[in-house]
Amino acid sequence: MKYLLRLCLSCVLVILMFAYVLLPVQFSIVTPRIGQPAIVTPGESLSIRLKTNIPYWRPGMELMLVSGQAQQALTVSKQSNSTNEIFISTTIPLNLTPGSYDLNIKMGDENLVREKAVYVLAQYPQELSIIQLADLPTLGGDGSGDKMLAKLIAEINLINPSAVLFTGDLAYGGGNWYQYELLLEAMATIDAPVIAAPGNHEYEGWSGFLTMLGNPYHSVTLGDYHFISLNSGHGRDQLTLSQFNWLTAMLQQNEDKTQIVQLHHPVKHREELRGYLHQYTDQFSTLVEKYAVPIVLSGHWHGDAVYDQNGKEYADTWEFPGTPYVVTTAAGADLREKYSSSPLHHGYRLIRFKGSKLESYTYDYDEDGQRDASSSIPVGKLSVVYKSSTNASVKNELAETFKKVKVKLYAPVSMGNLLPNRGHILRKYQKNEDYYYDISFTLPANSVVNIRLQ
Image (cartoon, rainbow, N blue to C red; front, side, top):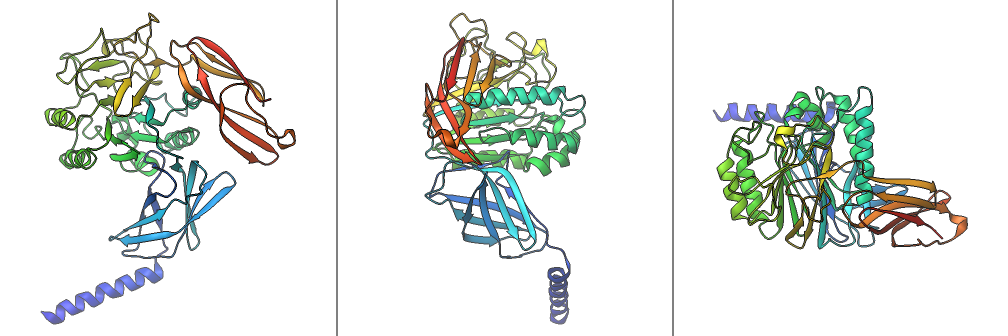
């Protein structure tokens, strides 16, 4: 028996030796990435998870954060292995300029890049603004969906939120890989961290979603805020037991933070409606109440609706005790009147927090001076017209004031240091022979504001 055991062990060692010698090294960056970014401040630890085809491999590697022409090497402070995964810890340098960074990892001849995987903030915000959208326009095809998403992203970048949540049904029309490539390219043009959850349509091209956006349920920390993204597309509208147990653990481990949950399928609903969560709904609501989750966000219905913890739908006010269960209209997919308690429109939701307090999550659609009970912001009411590289006109046709909008202007280095006629410079950097300026200012409701460098 001992002889057989030694023989088996020897065979395993021989196989592993051949694997190390003969197999081409393959690895992938699991996290961070678009959809599951790392959001950190200088001096903090950054965790990186890799997957490899060689068991217990401990390779030498080079880590780099890249933003435009700027590069910052990182030093591995800790590394551990499981069978086919490598876990790395490194520290963000104290002098690193805030901004979004691509993560580059080089091992031998292999060099992998995750675009906009890491966001470095000067400090964590105490006032948080979140854009949430779901049920996107169909990408590819005649290109109309691509243009609509690009217009939507231009508005998001103008609003300049702290984070952007994509709550499922991101790739319609079969979910082929080309659509996910287009989606990833579009997400990379967003100037804020992107956090993504899948919907039922993602299962039409599940391998594409997993390859481009990674783990279908996960969490992301942003200072005192904790975002939990769930996969309710399993079985079309269910949570698995393992996922529910993971959710329980995440809420418990982060109970000192303000926790925001997104999942594609609504949890609360009117009795006659279809397309809602069918598994662990009561247990889910119990957890939300126990850990004082301030808001639960969903999509799927292609219309706006808001429910309370007891399943009561609200059509008269957005302020009520307990957790609002919020359903957001389609960002570009077909609209469905019977599921919406606000006028039908394509749009997105703007959610504002101040500390742990939920400040607002609906929009004054009828412009009567009061936020509607469930309405999201209609797309197409914000625009920027560039008169020149140093002069832009920003138009706001919404009944909503935005305090920290952002526009980008640029001027030749030869013009020296310029200042905006209003607002302040968030960031200034040189690219080739030009200075680029990110300018932040307040954009009042129903207004046109001219911004220029002078």
